[in-house]
Length: 196
Figure 1: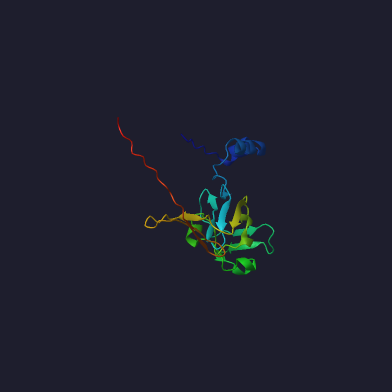
Figure 2 (figure 1 turned 135 degrees about the vertical axis):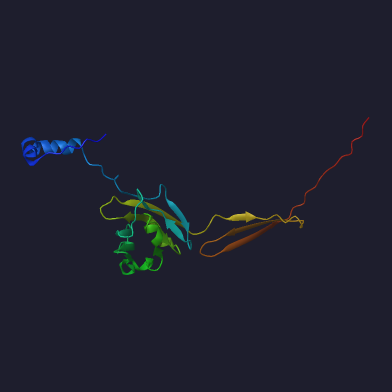
């Protein structure tokens, strides 16, 4: 239940000294929204050369970032920017030359606080610590590890052949396909046993 108290000027001047006003503010703070935070990925991101990947980052609680400045930087890089969104537009000219036309954010995602960085055609040189930053908010980090090749896929036993054929395929800087054929003779021994 909320009780409204109306005071005339004479009562307000007599009873509410500056000290009393300060005490009132401290004891009855106004409700404010929860602290805005920038949240990055909980663990490092792994990529293979040539992949298109996303470094996740969002505002919490969710709110539009369309009108905010969003900066993605990478430590040890000069100029340091890999992506800049300011005043409702992407600033391609602010990016480090090796990231031009390879980084973006989802424009529709910005409206919901999604400030994740999309990185296309990953290079070995992209590996490192990325910083997701919105001015006046604590920044968040994303670690990217880049490998040369994918985990090999081993497949195939050709049942129509007398040979065992294993195929191993891995994709990276150059595709590698290896076919291994093993020929081995297998002898089965069968004894007839007689019942006596």
